[in-house]
Length: 63
Image 1 (spheres, rainbow, N blue to C red):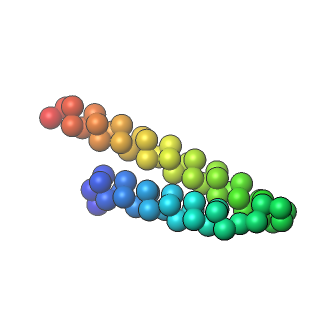
Image 2: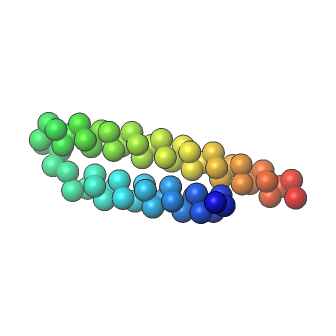
């Protein structure tokens, strides 16, 4: 699997989580907990995406 494919998968997952997050009712306690969990997962995926993009940039520079 190429880095571009991995980046696409991560971006797709971020969008799926954001869609779920939008449909939660934050005034319900369980939904607020789920919202926070989704927010955490999104931030983790964004960090991973950033690291992969940096690696990809370094690979291009090395060529």
